[in-house]
Length: 364
Image 1: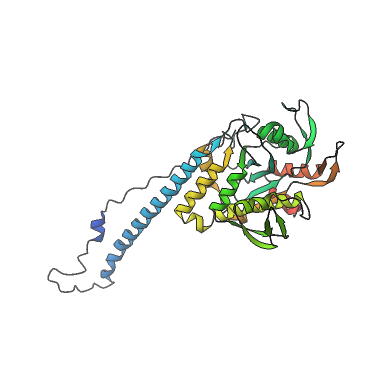
Image 2: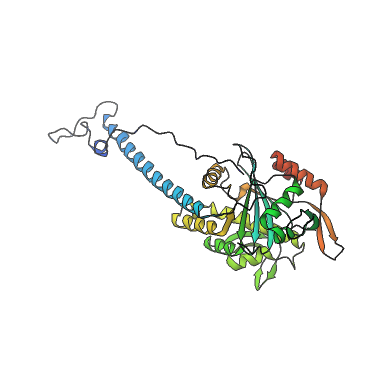
């Protein structure tokens, strides 16, 4: 479980003892008591008033900025407090504390349902936040990867199956345990996003724009090739399409990464950040969309959010966990074969926070 990071405290500044009346009062150099214009002293003594006007403007600017920041921090705090937290999401309740400068690995899972009904999970990613906070790497694990799933209440022995079976058999905790066994990397936090919430979030943002590499249709929606803007149920149909795509599940995973990146990019635009009403709406919708582990506390969310150094989707890097081909099980299931050598490289990059090198060596 991640160590709580206290909010950084601001260093108090000494208050200016001048009042606004003092700052606005005319100087003696401006006029004499008789009403006769005063002679300007050599060197422009009449300009002495400008520093005071500047101080007034600066003070007003600081007050406005303080009020705006106060609103944004309050909105962030309110939204964070509303996020559902589930102590059972992570398989290990005593995760290693995260030190400043350490990378953070989040498991992102998309689910059809929340609560006691596990539903299905069509989306599984690891979001690796680099230690310098300059990049977020979205690593997709295909739902049909053939892996070893640990013994659980549904299947009481270790078994080979598609990785998405872990969610059906044991929910997020078993999914994360399976993922940790596959990668050898301890996951720090878990985030479950329900698809109904996903629909609302893209609607609240007014749609997100992605570069669609191939035209397709799904569930009555047509997606042309090129840059398209999608939202709501249309966006959900886009990220869930698998059939009639050239590379099937690989293309679906690429779409999911693209849409997550577009959501981050749209959220960080001036249209959202500079619009208090829209900012509050997006935060409120996002908080209602997800469930996180109990270690992702209010203070840790605020600390992580304020530590980010990227300000657009350009700071998000998309990665596909490696497969070497396709296979078929004894009972006829078609699956994706894990590239064992490639997985070792990816695991080392996640552990050592060298994802930039991994991406450079494995362009996608």
